[in-house]
Image (cartoon, rainbow, N blue to C red; front, side):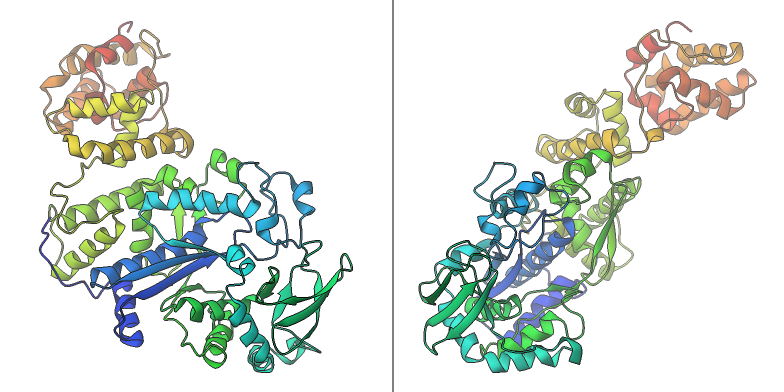
Length: 539
């Protein structure tokens, strides 16, 4: 690949956003990019869209020579409001409703809490796709009273906050009666079923619990359970962390939605201009296999996607699509097309295949760069080994699912992978094996017959298969390509007065016990000659 220092393509949305951040926030020593979520259940692939969108923008800023802080907030001090349907121990979890999520026990007994379990699931997977944020745990921060000043400021401006919140509500939903911008987890029973009794204008906040009857006046500077409502908590933390960029889903970016509210709160109460943002759309899934859905209910997460797509392909799905565009992650036959599209992008990026013009090349190269887990503009100096995903699936099935055997067959060929290309090839092979065994339609799957195992064929078909064995297969090495091999196969059909389709059907029945299979010429050339002869020896 041409590795000279080229100006970033303005066509990519991450670069456009990076330029906008610099333009609107000015030159800074460091830019802070933020993302976050409440770990109230499985962090699904739709949530991942925000994470990787921030990562892509952060990369673009770094490519411009900027220092970037990428923070990811775990809002694990939010209330545990309902038990997701795909969680185990439903009755046990229900006992902890209204608790902070960080105080709910882990129903799998693996981690210190329910929240921590979901956090660990994400934190262990993100490095696989090259994402390494700085994690902020909000329960820890609130309980250490790190936001005491921000809480007090909200109390001082509660009339202003009420006006801002009501501005975006119709008459039927405006705040009624006394309202407070804070809530309290009871010191006695841990639930948030509390009412504020009053604030002394300084640091004292009184409350009583409706669940257990406990009441107290706490010092905001020391209290563990005082928390801002999320529409105020969000902009408070923008100011606290000096956030310059944070995207949000289209539900939060709707007219008069939570981002509009937060923008006003940030400016009018916390004196901080809201971060640069954009709206990202929802993503769907299709062709989800049974094993995947049984392990996580109806929720597909990053780990599920990485079973089928390599880390680079996973990044490509998002880097190659504008955030405000809805798209679907496929697990069905479309997987083959997605791998083909990525491979073509890679060839263009490495200038192995010519782009239609310079602009198309720059766009393809930029998407490719952002799709890599660890991109070094000075290397690597060798393009990854390419093998069509469909063909790789066939090779692995020919090898009875043995990846090492399938890869060894490629290594022994004259055009096989170089040693430095093997890790990437094996990573793709692992996905091909999983997809073929768990996601591919039944007609795509096959198993080679055992030696001597015969199919029920007519006399004419049996004679043709015998001829196929003794001429084409016995001399398979003489065919330089699939075309010459296919011509020899059709010649046998003609010699036996068989329609070409009839011979193909007979061959597939003899080899894999099905009426259809992979392209026959390529299939025969991909299988060990002695193994083929052994399968057909009794015809």
